[in-house]
Length: 481
Image (cartoon, rainbow, N blue to C red; front, side, top):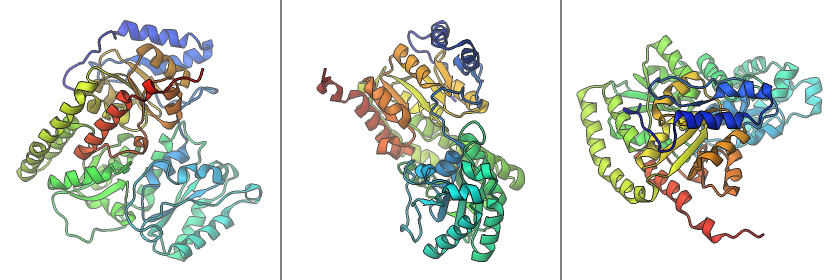
């Protein structure tokens, strides 16, 4: 958490509350009443949420949220590289089955990694007569085509739940016949209020079907840890994992970016869980703490300041050997990071950024922007819970606007009033703001760039932010009218 309360020139509690009131004035009375508690002025001193969250989106409002299926398939299960992940339902939802989150994978495609689209391709007849037989046939074909896959996940889409198909019994029977783990995940998109429930359901299925079913072949050591909630977007895990290993830790498993089923299944043997994306994986950390006595800690690997603080926080949980290695690593990289800051900060100092993302990024990335001299003038989440906003309050400057699941109208209104130099959000928002002439970075998948995590990632992050804000493109392009 930040040590002191920062302020942004021109932003006070009064100006932010006036902006919120002006924004809400456009709504009908009922919609205004529903949306008002989800917008607020940040109060870092309180250390608590200033907005309500995890409520259903107002009908008719264009939201940036996804569904429970997207949270299960696109976030938690999809990055596990040595499993076949089946989208069970109509092919349209397969949008989330391949390539949408840029979860980088190692291995040989079709042999040790399976980043392909697998779907049962539900048709009308399957809705009428049920799809259990089709699913059983699919599982048999998948095992025949890819016999080296370590397991299969079955992720159900809306129609499967609506017609009452029993994927659990099909998975159980097929697992016995094929002699491989087949994990059913009842993550129909209509469940819950956002993709957050998909994360939770996936954590529960890992708890029920996977964790504790394997053991590591290597002997245990006091420095065995697992990296939780790291999805290897743009190669993030390939930056963070080597950094932790350089500090003397044995990273036994990564959940779930470039993850391996058997290593995930043996995570109950580690000494500490290090969680990055708290929202999507805190459930399993708490399960392992309660069931196996494994402590956990949330760390931040965005930007040198937060990396330095996180490594020292982690070292405090271990012996002097680790502490010495951590200090040596920090001493090694600090001059390199300062060189990057010296290069980019003169061009970015005083620039303003607004954020609307999911997971950890609306709070974790703030420190990285501040390392470059930038101010975060507004931040919000698509699917956060109260504890996410509790963690966000100390990270943001005083009185800046906080928005939960904002509509497209609200986000545009805030951007128009606050005049940010950069917006960091998702693909749905990208082209809206670019057409408005506002520089934009896609903070869900790094705009085909990355990694952004770790020391290695900060150089890429700084370059991309500078490229977006200071590109001469907008000056060279003339409107055709």
